[in-house]
Length: 279
Length: 279
DNA sequence: ATCGCCTAAATTGTGTACAAAGTGAGCACT
DNA sequence: AGTGCTCACTTTGTACACAATTTAGGCGAT
Image 1 (cartoon, rainbow over the protein chains, first blue to last red):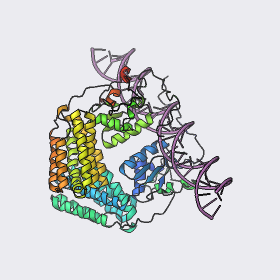
Image 2 (cartoon, rainbow over the protein chains, first blue to last red; image 1 turned 90 degrees about the vertical axis):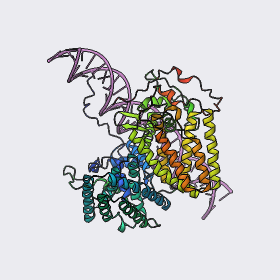
Image 3 (tube, protein in one colour; image 1 turned 30 degrees about the horizontal axis):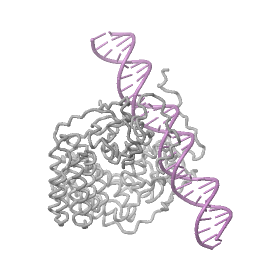
Image 4 (cartoon, rainbow over the protein chains, first blue to last red; image 1 turned 45 degrees about the vertical axis):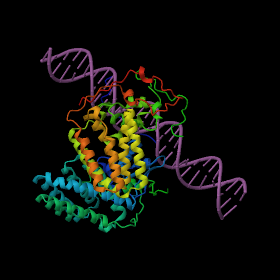
């Protein structure tokens, strides 16, 4: 048979003409390769409002994949707590209560303070240098007003420290907590005072560099309680948009591959409007 | 109406004569309804040796479902850390290193001690009563030598306390940590000294009842370090069995539904042998 | 005899079809 | 008008088919 090699055109994709394939991986190139990352960013930045229903078919069309992959992604997102899966009803962007906010922050205080103590012990000069560079990137993103990039970097920073802590399990928990924190900020914080203070990060690094465990922990704790305090009880208002544009980052990385000039793509899409969960 | 109607014979699986449909949901009735629970128990109790490859088709046949469901289950298990998913290679029972054991136990000390402090504050007399009853069940299972049931109860106990703590996020983390602890014990502990001491549990409850926060925390910490100390560096030997029998609990709950007398079922199975990961 | 390629089988990855469940509008009835 | 029912439509759940990848074994050349 000798097949197996290249059956020429593996393009059986003719399916239903409805819902035009809005875009192939257009913005999938940007660095995150997976659906999970894109949705996570959209949720964390608040472009996908809490409670919004995530219809599998729409997501599938948006990402130009089949529902199979979408379901996988949704399941993963539900593990992390960004998405709520209701049997036979579908997936919704999680809308955590204020109590949940407190729980998340309490967990973070407990875990991350421990991590920072350990990290302060273990970290090398090289580690500190890398973290400083990372902080610079944060500051730059902030200065330029690159919102989503900043958000991602801020989370990344905490994660890097978590990895320095040396406990893979705790680092994994942080991986779950960070996006949840972001969602909470998107929900309960005025858009103006978002973020988590690059200045604090620098102070933290200084103390870590000096080996000042107690100080570093204190700084972090303060940083975290500050974040929590900035949450207001009233959920921030969320404007409804259509799924595709919520998922598309404001402007792709930069390069904007000339080969694919990112056409007006889904403009023609029936614009599946986001409706929050009726319940 | 859960599991469909049974449209007569959903048994299209004629293909390879090998691996005959070993059993329909036979032991799925026993209380845990899902694949996840069954596999989790099998892993936690050591019947499925660490590193064993979990072939989707075999699992599907064993549980009489399609691979779709199996994949879902495997994904969930991998999230908890009981199963390792290697792209294009398949799923393996996790074989955590000793370092991982320390990480898991450190995380548990950190989190569970915090939980117990909170639980001691919040718990009502009623809560304590329920926990005492639960301890009695543990003791009974231990006395009767009902291994898997004991294992499940011991985990459940810690989880109940976690829920008393009042922080849903931390409770969720405990849900992830408990089965991992069990896997570690299955891997690194002599079968004789398994388990985690019902006596300790009782002592803990007494202190919680008295509102002795410090004492309760101390007891728990001691309990946990004791568990960790019982792990030996050398992985315990694992005997290979076939998948189906590894998944079948030694003897179902108790009742042994007369309607389904649990025949010698898979005895005739060609016994898809478990092979640990070559790597 | 050993190494490497090449082929065949086994296993995982993904798309699609169909069934079950949920949702909402319209209609009849009180 | 208000309430409850039915029916059509939407959306999720599951099985299955086929493609892609890995794995193992055989064959020939050095």
